[in-house]
Amino acid sequence: MPFLSKVPLNPRRNGALALIGNPHALHATVLAGIARQPVTERVLWRLETGNRHRPELLVLTESRPDWTHIVEQVGWPAADDGQALTRDYTPLLQRIAVGREFAFRLTANPVQEVRYPQKMTDEQKALRAKQDAVEGLRKERGVRGFRVPHRTAAQQLHWLLSRADRLGFTIPRTEAAPTSADLGFDEPGEPAPDVALTARDVLRFRKHKGGREVVVATATFQGRLRVADTDVFRTTLLNGIGRSKAYGQGLLTLAPLPESGPRG
Image (cartoon, one colour):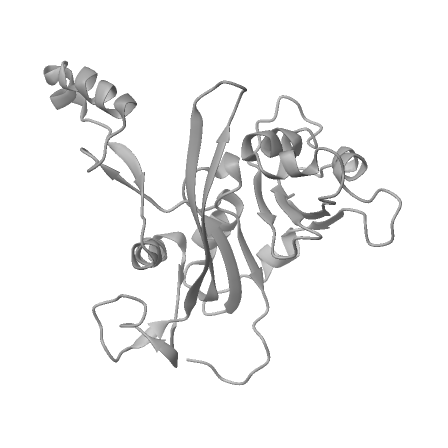
């Protein structure tokens, strides 16, 4: 039985900013809330920082978690509205139906796999040279390319739209501005998909002191989706979208659409 939790964080507590600024450390803290250790279940999480005075941690787990350690260390353990909220996720999954529309939010790591990046790091060059040295094995098994981030807003939007069908949903078009041309698509004058890229960021952190720097490019999408395949969409909700899930990427959350009359 899956559970969705919301944990408020107090950025003024000692160590809170260091934890918030390091996805690797925050991931370990999240996993510490799961009783079944070592953790083998899928855990998705996302850090919401829209309110800098009260960031919130959203976590989707397969088993009921306990966030006491987070609340006591970097939250408001004795304050009103300072406790973690955990809700059964099953009722939402049961409301999924073909054609039903939801407002959605997603922070993800849009990447592409390429054989030769335009700008290769020394580490990538060394790895590519090693792979090229085993030509026969490469032809037999194929070569795994390098994952590089999509850098422009249009590329990141295309990344999401190109995956929607196989993730069990579509993003309807809207008559409201902007048009497809405004979003960088080759369809001037056509209604644009009802999705906006609301934030873009690059996370830089180290797993261990003195270790190599980890760089994760992120994009936050908000908009409207329509369920196309119930089973596939439920799997998408539970498994997340894209790479870097351990670093807070890929959790797709839903909300009722605003009551504003017919859309699209």
